[in-house]
Amino acid sequence: MGISYDASVPSPADKLVVERLRVRKGKNAILNGVSLTVRGGEILALIGPAGSGKTTFLRCLNRLIDLEPELAVEGRLRLDGLDVYGEGVDVPSLRRRIGMVFAVPNPLPMSIRDNLTLGLRILGAAAAGPPSERIERSLKAAYLWDEVKDRLDDSALKLSGGQQQRLCLARSLMAGPELLLLDEPCSGLDPISTAKIEEALQGLKSRISVVLVTNNVKQASRCSDRTAFLLMGDLVEMGETGLIFTNPQNRRTADYVSGRFG
Ligand SMILES: Nc1ncnc2c1ncn2[C@@H]1O[C@H](COP(=O)(O)OP(=O)(O)OP(=O)(O)O)[C@@H](O)[C@H]1O
Ligand SMILES: [Mg+2]
Image (tube, rainbow, N blue to C red; front, side, top):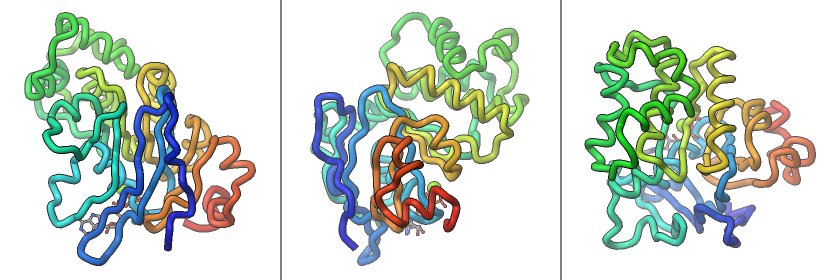
């Protein structure tokens, strides 16, 4: 199967340009040459059935995939012109620019405050203002500030699941990322917690580009600007979210977004 959609023609508005991204283990392809762009200030939803390569795609963007040396990565990724796989790229500084939130909230067993500042200390991010200001800004952006402002020294593990996930979102914002990757961030959350995360993303997108992997097509249609549909490692179709949901060009996209398969 070849590429059936090519959105790689870059424009100045693009934050990230992905060209012919191919990931394989031996002869087995996991991604078959995916080309797409992520624009500045947009939420791009990435949808597709289990095993289609969504998580693998995200892990390539911030080079978490480096942790799996059995996987071969080919193609070209550029973040504001920086060749992500170029020689001499400083991976910690790349990961300061590209934040990530996972499906299962993963706060560390320490205070809320320490959860927020630990990553900064490890990454050695240059301080933009005192930590307390950053903490407040990140928690406000993650819609969590009012709920935790009087208990920053309590254990993060005492928070509810939905609060823990918003803490993880706040943590990912501490280093001031330009691109935020979210891998099914609401899959274990109730509708109210989900709505808070979605609102937070709307507030963030003016300054941060977001790639939102979701197994919930309704979530993609509610909160993304563009949607990409991945199937078995192929990018089948990508476009403005309204069009993908009302007038998809590909039969497989139509079937998936209408719930006829997947
Ligand atoms: N390290 C690996 N070694 C071998 N195969 C892998 C590895 N990582 C991922 N895969 C395979 O690649 C395919 C895509 O996996 P991936 O986790 O990216 O899918 P996904 O779209 O995120 O699925 P889900 O919706 O279930 O999270 C799967 O068939 C998976 O088994
Ligand atoms: Mg996944």
